[in-house]
Figure 1 (cartoon, rainbow, N blue to C red):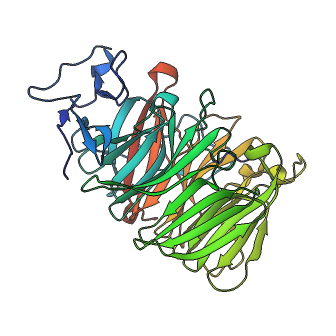
Figure 2 (tube, rainbow, N blue to C red):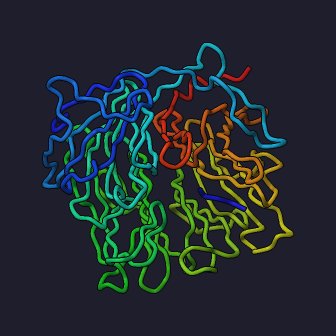
Figure 3 (cartoon, one colour):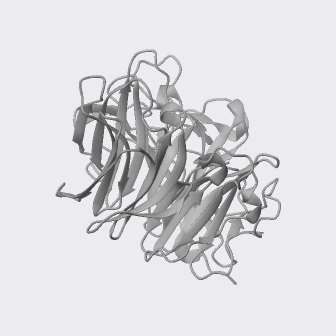
Amino acid sequence: MHWSGGPNRGDRHVVPSGALVSLGRRAGAPAGLFALALLIGGCGQSAPPSPGASTTALHSVAGVPTSSATAILGPRDVPCASSGPAGTTPGAFVIESVPAGADRCAEIGPLADPEVTGLTNDGPIVAFAGFDAAHAGDLWLGDLRSGAVEMVYQAAATGIEIASPQLASGHLLWLEWAREAGVGYSVGGAGGPGVTEWWLKDMDTESRRITTLTHDRTPGFGGETLGTKILFDGSRLGIQEGLKDGATRIVVQDWPSGKSVQSVTVADRVYDFALTGDGVLYSAGTDRYGPYGTDHTRLMDCPREGTCRTVAPDVYDVAASGDVFAWLADPGSSQDSDSLPGARLYTTNAKLDPAVAVSSTEASRQSQGIRGIAAGSGVVAWWEQDADVGMNTLTISTAGSAAPFQLATSGDSVDVSLGGGWLAWFENVGSGDSSTTRVRAFPISAIVRA
């Protein structure tokens, strides 16, 4: 089983150490007005703002209303792992913190509200979107060096959902989906039913200027395409689009010229894709449960010049960066059979030499899963989950190491990102109204195995 799992910066608000920060819309506030609600020391009372600080200053970025409220938590340099997780995956790798002398994590949080998703990072700069329907059209940008987090974008209309945020080279790109009234959200999903039109937008993170790169009505609503996922590495932009005839197209453009350098059309549904140095790597299969499932998936390598070739069967999630390729194979789900092995993560190099399984052997059991795969700077990171044990465990495999290791996080998650030489992840602690989220990260150079 797998679970795939500058200008206009506005006023700043100083948050006392240890405070819980609410990034959400204040109850009863007019639409478009946002404030920071602070819960000090768990007492449940809102703290008064610092003298002269503004928490609701509203301004416009490229004609789109957005809040300037910013939380400054102060530089946060905390232990990456003060204690191990409450439960660990049986038979999995050793639980350890980053080695002594480099065992400090940069941190943003804890964030009390709303729930967040879609973590992306470029070094210590991070971005993420809101998870729940009330905040699905919101984007935040944070700096782990200072502990600052700021809402930089709020969709101009209700009913807008942000997906697939990507941060690199001073630009934040994302997809926006508009849905029919009454159709529920599928935050983080691949479009889903009821999407009437979509946009691909780009924000210059310094000037905060926003540009619409692509806009289309979707098939069935007078349009031609539905953008379902993007990837951006600072020099190339990959766009996955659903077409009228049910096929999928992956377009790769040069950045910033926008010139198309590769286009791959697939008759089947594409589950995931990654940009490689020589083209694209994608997984695809036939629809099993409408737009939400695939069957008999396979991994394909499509170089910019030449023909596509099959790499491996039963593959779902895909990640690639430099000389590191990784993918999640799940024969049991792909072939709909409980007698076949479950999820296993494999890695190889850009030459596509024989792949090696790096996830725990226990993860091949049907009760376990793997969520949130990321690759970068010679590292692959993912969350291993065991339904019989509890919390997910962040696992890291470094090039040349004898075996992966698991980071002793204080909470679990499904989000992990590798960009600009930094590893970043969400840690979710607690449940329900008492749950909080931290964004934590450290430079990949800090990982030095004994």
